[in-house]
Length: 115
Length: 114
Image (tube, rainbow over all chains, first blue to last red; front, side, top):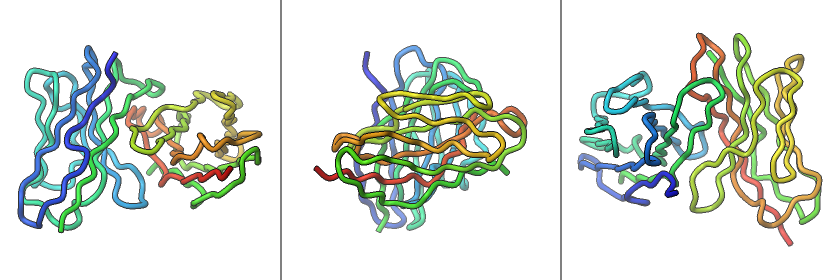
């Protein structure tokens, strides 16, 4: 069974440009999460989808970030326009269920560098 | 709010040395506690977890015991290998308001030399 995949693995863009990150969860996982880790700091929650619906987007930093999950399968996270402080590693995770002890399965992350 | 504090790295050890990575947490209620590991070029993988006080999680020779009295979940391994070189993240969930979204620490990089 394929794990969570993310594309691209690396992206280098200039300030003001747009970038779209993609996440393909494990097949059959209704729950999909986005996280971000700024260099050397904690992994921070961004948002959570249940199928195609946003369950919790309390971690989204501002309206330059837009996440979608059309059809409840893969998800995209668009940053427009990108700023320097958006640099970091963006992780996607998925799970079949949700709960305090449910295991989330993470992708390898997309390293975003904004110059 | 909830938080997790890990010892800063990198931790550099020789093969077969004993490993301890400290993790303490601040949370209301009774969270579940986790250790995740990220090997180079890969995503985070759950290493072990404990869901209640005094539980011990174990996997691949690693162990951690949920200590409510000291609010700690220290990761230990008796004899590390070069292949254990990775970044280790301590996390909690299910504390405030029953949230299922994990709160992570900053990660501790482990480097094991032959």
